Length: 199
Image 1 (cartoon, helix red, strand yellow):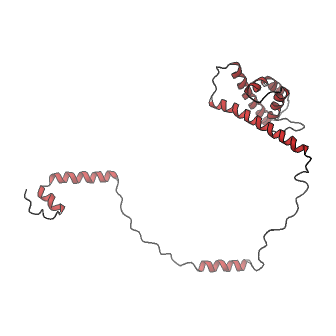
Image 2 (cartoon, helix red, strand yellow; image 1 turned 90 degrees about the horizontal axis):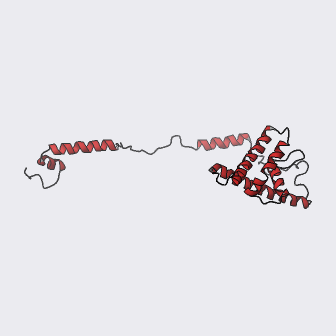
Image 3 (cartoon, one colour; image 1 turned 180 degrees about the vertical axis):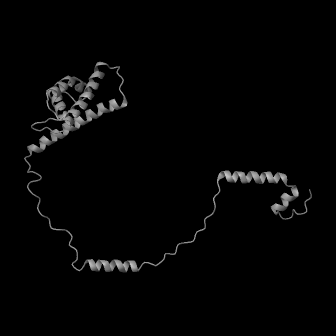
């Protein structure tokens, strides 16, 4: 918010009240100027709705700060504590910007922007030999150079079974193994030198 001839923003008003009392920007000074800030809002008739909402939002935070100063046992939510810290930060930042702007004003520097901008010469001028026809020909040559068909690598997709299917297969194999005779188990395992083992 910036101060104009007809409008002072909420931060401008709050900073003015604090500086008038020569206070530091902290929760104590904010609590002290709360009543005067609300009185200043009431003395501003016919503010637009959007600007009124900004003043009221800041007043709500000031009332919260004052309530905590009167009732130290008052517990604040994380959002409320964050709002208070944010207000102190915004107000301190606004004060710095305001002081810096006054310093720049005292330098009597010329305006950074005056009048209409000058016409700048184009930085890039295409080659006059480049025409729509030549671009079309270059694109056709490029496209004609592509292979008619792309040879895609052949891949073999293996079937992946789920864990449940694997467990079922193992259970079936174990069950089948219990039903087989010792000789049949050895024969199906194809272990060399075990074909003459007797039951």
